[in-house]
Each structure stands twice: as structure tokens, then as C-alpha cells.
Length: 360
Image (cartoon, rainbow, N blue to C red; front, top):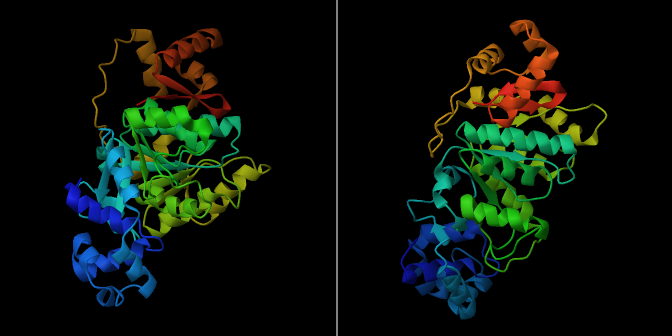
């Protein structure tokens, strides 16, 4: 985070009404840094921005707004990262419209680690939420921080899965970081700030305006190596995130569903357009290459020989109980009991369709 005098200049520019990120960056290119922009004459500023914006820059924002941010920064969990900081997320520098500064609550280091976006419908089915949470946890254990938007439904499930895995989760929000939206996700937001991170390009106090969320979506995809869409209708905002991902050169993945469900049509549309169909987290890990989680995996508890044999028979691909019975010569009752034990021990996850998968 920059020194206070420099930070005040960044904040002063960022709080000018009507000054967008693109114009902000053009001013930096012209004058070198925010302090020089704030000291520039109106005529010089007007060569880059409109006369009204130039006048607003010279007048500066309400000082109380800057003081409110500085008070917010007194909390050690809060910080601001600017384009001039070495800790600015490197992947965001590759997109066409990186924000000049980011408000962060939680761990800023997560923004420069391998990440994957997991997004989908706010009105998710129970199965869709279960899929999102299971995929997110397995991908988090595979080394990818899970990025999503803190919305109800798929986003919330993805955050829960990411937090439960080794690589945590980050929420990119469309409000100021002093506003929790939706309010029903307040506990989840607190968990993310404590064990992951919350990120916004919007000033403190910014309410949940509809126009902010598509802008938020470009950052969700921009911070990642790929985007997984779990459930989405044809007009879902998740398809906006997927479109941004394609424009930014990220991989796009989609989980197929029932041909009769409106929440599958968005995923099917993406698959028709070239998104990669995925049936398990392994499909994504094999495509992107599993990353190394940043916090060490706890030592595995010893596994009884008969259970290890069943794990070896399973491999890492999904398998149903009947298949495992055939491979191991087990009775259905024995296989069911062993699979339940392995699931409770966190060594196996239960997938849709009665299948099981070994957890990496």
C-alpha cells in the first residue's frame, strides 16, 4: 500500500464522479502519477478528459470521504492496492480495463495465486449448489483459489467449497466493501474476510447498483486461469463472466444438465460455442494442470489395508458402487459401508448419479 500522501492522491482521483478507469489510466500515462494529476492545471487536464471532469479533479472530492477510507484502513484486515504496487494482481494487468485501485479485506496474497472462477445461477437447484460446492472444494484442494461473486446460489456454494479446501476463496463484489450484499450472505462474507478475501474496485459506501455487476464480472474472470459455469439460464449474468473469460484468453468450462431444465440451457449454449464439457474436477485439473496449494496438506491419517485397496481400485475417476463391487469382489453391503466410512474421513466424495470419486 502506498504512503499516505500518495494514497490520498490515488483516492482523490478515484472518488471524482464521472472519472472512469480508462480516463484514470490515460491521466496516469499523461502525467506520470496521481499527485501530478491532482496538481495539473485545468487546461492541461482538459487535453485528456472533459472540462467538467478537469474541474472536478481540481476541486477534489469531499475530504470526509477520504478520511472515511483512511479510518477503514486502520483495520489491519483492510488495504488498498494500486496499479503502482508490486502486489497488484498480475493477471489483471493483462485485461483491457484493469481498475486503478482495489479495496481488499482479507489476504491480498490470494490475488496472485492460481485461481479459477466458479459461477452460476442465483436460483440454483439443490443439485447445482451441491455440484458447485464439491467442485470448488476439490479444485481448491488441487491448488486453485476459488473466485466468485458472493451472490446467492452457485456463488455462495462455490465460496463454501473453496474455503473448505486448501487454497481458499475470494469474493469480487459489486458494492463498497463496507456493504454486504446480499445481506443473507453476511456470515459467508465474514468467513471470507477471515480466511480468504473480499475485493472491490468500488468506493466505500457504493450500494448494489445494477450497472456495477457486469463490471464486477470482468474482474472475476480476469483474476483467474479459467471459468467454470455450473448452472445458468440463457440470460444469466454468468454468461457475461464466461464471455469476459473468452475475451481475456481464459479457459471456459461448463457442467451439462437436463435438456428440460432452463438452468442447463446457458451451460449447453456455452458447450455448443466451444466451452469444455466437464463431469468432474479432474477434467479441469487435467486441462489446467493441478497447482500446488500454498498451505501444506495435513499429514494423512493411516488408512486400513482393506480401505486402501478400495481406494486403489477406485483410482481418481468417478465410479459407482456396482463397478467397485465387481472390481473388488465385494458385497453391496460391504462396499456401501466402506464408502460411507471413506466419505466421512474425507477421502471420497459423493457425486451425482450414485458415483463416488477419490479426493486428491
